[in-house]
Image (tube, rainbow, N blue to C red; front, top):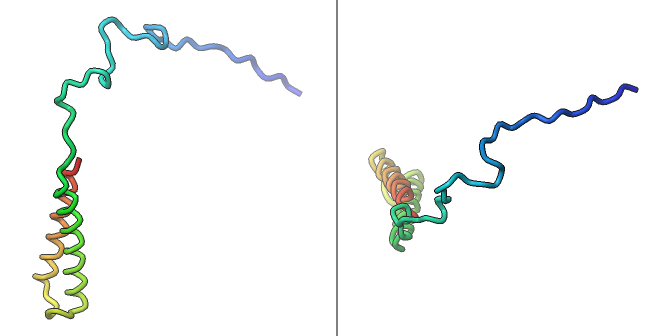
Length: 94
C-alpha cells in the first residue's frame, strides 16, 4: 500500500490576525444612523396588494367562464392590469 503524502500548510496571506479589526472599524449593524432603517408599511399596503391580485384573478376567471359578461379582451387586460398593480404594490411592502 502507498503512503498518503503529508499535508502542507499554506499561508493565507491575511494582513491582520483572524478575529481582529483594523483601528476605527465598527460593524455596520452596531452603528445604525437611521437612514437605512425604514418604518414598517401601513396596513393598507398588504391589503391593497392582495386585494388587487385577488380581484384581478377573479376578473380573469369570470371573463374566461363568461358568466357575468361576454368574453372580451379588454376585460382580460383589466384583470391583468389589476394583477400588475398588486405586484407593483408588493414592491413597496416593507
